[in-house]
Amino acid sequence: MQIAFYAPLKSPDDPTPSGERRMAELVMAALRAAGHEPIRASSLRSYDGRGDRARQAALRDAGLAEATRLIDQWAGAPPAAWLTYHLYYKAPDWIGPAVAAALGIPYLVVEASHAPQRAGGAWDLGHRAVEHALKQAAAVFHLTRRDRAALVPLVAAPERLHFLLPFLDPAPFVATAGARAAHRAALAAAHGLDVGLPWLLVVAMMRPRDKLPSYRTLAAALATLTGRPWQLLIAGDGPARAAVAAAFASLGDARVRFLGLVPPAVLPQVYASANLFVWPALNEAFGMVFLEAQAAGLALVAGHSGGVEDTLIPGETGLLAPAAEPAAFAAVVAELLADPARRQRMGRAAAAFILRERNLGRAGAVLDAALRQAVGW
Image (tube, rainbow, N blue to C red):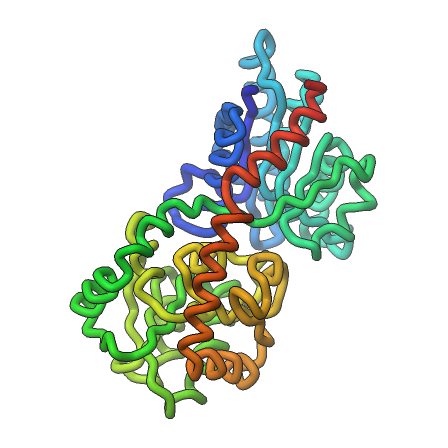
């Protein structure tokens, strides 16, 4: 069936790479894997990060105007359903609920969060829009266990709430893992790395509010491990690049290599070259990078925050560590640095886990079942 697809926070055609954009692309890919035809309904970005009520009202008006356009466009032949990816108070959906109601088609949401404490605050307009959308939804998919409790009171019936575990397309990572030694040698030559040392890897954009605290925590953690042999590879860039560099400055150039913004097609090679993925993940919903690292056969040390625990099998494919405590995080990194055999076992288990349980086919089947129920097929 044809599905109208919309991502109010960041469209799949947004020029800036991020886990948000990648996940939107993956939801569309999962729909295709299940035999559906997702069509991008709109690229309007409804995000307001400042709590600017006037801007929020302007975005609402733009969204409702876009809804009117789509209602007219599809009046004779509407899509079978509307699916919005990622709904929260800073980026509400002003388009989908209006279009779905006018055309008489089911409205579905993948990855929604609800924050009751935002009622009456600077984002009250977006907060109420999210509540309205969730109450209207024929199906709501939550990607982490922590989001479910706040959604239950808003979803019309329990059977409309579905757990869609975080997923990805493992194919590019599986294809790259077979040439791990060659990719490692090439990366070492390009960046002056020592192939005899364990390589720790970070893949993350450099943003002031959300990513920077994780970078600073990681830098503080690794500063306590300078008596051990390792090198750190950082793949990413962004407006906080100078602040990130300052956080790692005391470790020296011999320890830390900044790879810059790595193209998505090349990232699987970088993952395959490393020995251990490390990321505190403060303020992250769940972290696509953890799925990518595991797909490439890397063990993890992941900060125990948000929905991160739903991206791995703790103790089997990686270890969870206190996210905001550098010393405790460092202790877990040291545990796996000291045990190469355990890292390798975890890496093999991680690749098998992703291939078996977190693929497009699995996700597509969950989406397909709910879509068919909502549409009445």
